[in-house]
Length: 429
Image 1: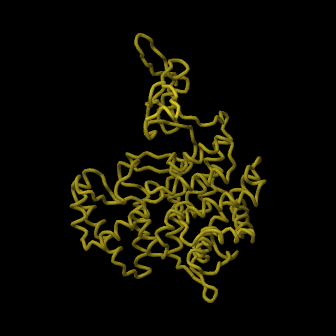
Image 2: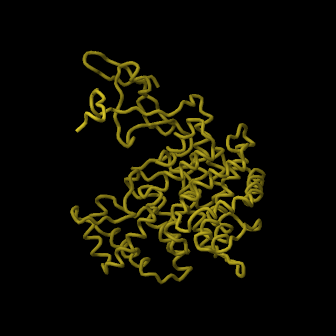
Image 3: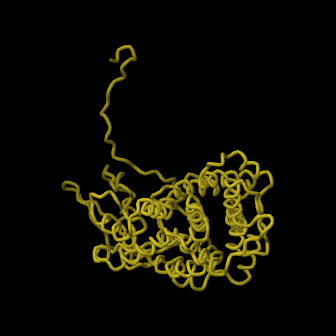
């Protein structure tokens, strides 16, 4: 495509190359703008800035489209499992049966932690947030696997990916047990990915936890839905850290810290906290909906609407059915979950929400599922991190293998004081 955009500054025209993506997305290439004109662009929050070209995930928010490596999310959650989806994201293609067996075998081989790592958990106070522990322990893993921290060939990348994806479950389960003062439960090589995670979290030495197929499948699908979401805050963080040459473990650890924020990975936790607030205040769902409509009320319905999706979040459509199945399977009788169901029912029929397309999003339903399963709310972002891990690995790989491979270095518009002189301490009043 030879089409170009033209920027006019004063009486000077500057041609700008237009880049077109595989789905018809158009971008104006401004990489030489500052060198040619002395100007930069200003885009707070990077809402209109493309920081990279990526072949991993495609999102069309207006139409509610989400695809991993070209495959619609609806097909993946129906036919695939989390491990297969992870392989697709990292390597770009669905695995053959032989590749799937090999990758699954690597996960089983790498599920144990080095015994010395258990002592790291002892150094954390019992009040530690699980995301703080996870970030620190992912970094600590690089000390035990120095060769894999910066893999230099496809075999090492696969080994590093399997190591991270397998051990992250054990790290999460051990952090949960440590905070509760319960003995660690080791992974079982006979269990599948999600079943093993729930086993390590909820089993006791005298009694093994056996999650139902409904619960296991719901959590597995939840991880698939969270596996990647284009250039969000945590993924952009992973890519930026990776651009410095930082190793895989450090880059993922940074992504975990970004995900920890309440505006990102803490969104489903915020849903439960909102429900707790509603219950404690004795309000009913209808009152909350009416308050949410008033701009000066200070009350906001968490888990409704999405920055990217201007239509129904495609992930929410999928996980809603799983949410209903899990609640029915477990026979939950929880006042918070009842409030959530009432809010959902009212908002889906209320003209105010329909006109503004404020539909329940994936965070609304995922928080309800995790609470029903027994996951404490401060561990909701941790489950998000487990799901997002293959996406982070894929983006780290794409960044480090990029032909440009430049260090990310955003510009700024300085708004501070003009030049001024230093005043010695004794002369200041």
